[in-house]
Image 1 (cartoon, rainbow, N blue to C red):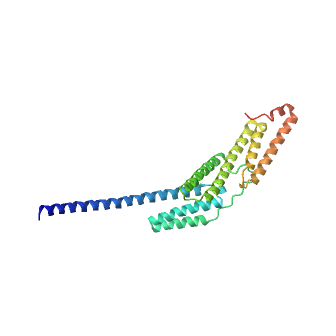
Image 2: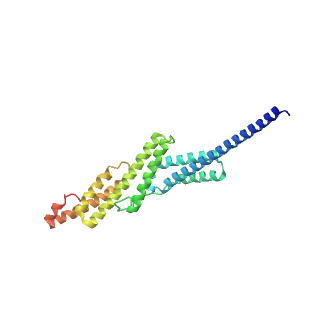
Image 3: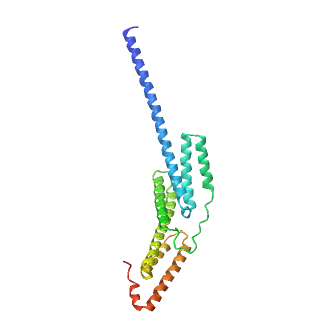
Length: 241
């Protein structure tokens, strides 16, 4: 074999090794990209499922459940295209069955001034609604949710957020009444009633009625106090510090 032939043979071997290394690297890159896609999809499924499951049923409108449910199913469909395992198919089917279950009825608590039972529950619900709104906006920004669906559900999320914020203000009014008396609390109650009336589509009728009754009681207490001590009337219209 001539030196030229030997050189060509060596060069061919080097090229073959280079091609093999390139192909191996491409396969590894594709494997890594697939792994990252699977991780991202699983994280999206986990986050969206948590948002839906942890949100109090009072705020899970049919539109919110439909949009978030469809989003989660879309994530599952994409994941199955990458990893079509029986375990993944079973998890998606379990989610579909869970989504099809009707939510328990959540009537407004009888005699209550607030939708949430306490301050911690109200703060937690408000944080969950805020995160849900951010998630819906992100899905729309990524082109995975239509403008119409995003607009409708974000309005409902904002309505729930305002509702819980009013709850916290009412709890403040109750605390003010207990600690400083009805004359100071009456202004807070009136402010809460106005905000509650401004919430659209939140089924606030019973809460408004309960708050009106509480406000009427507080105003009657103030009137009695003024009759018993006319000087107390000078404090009625003074703003709360």
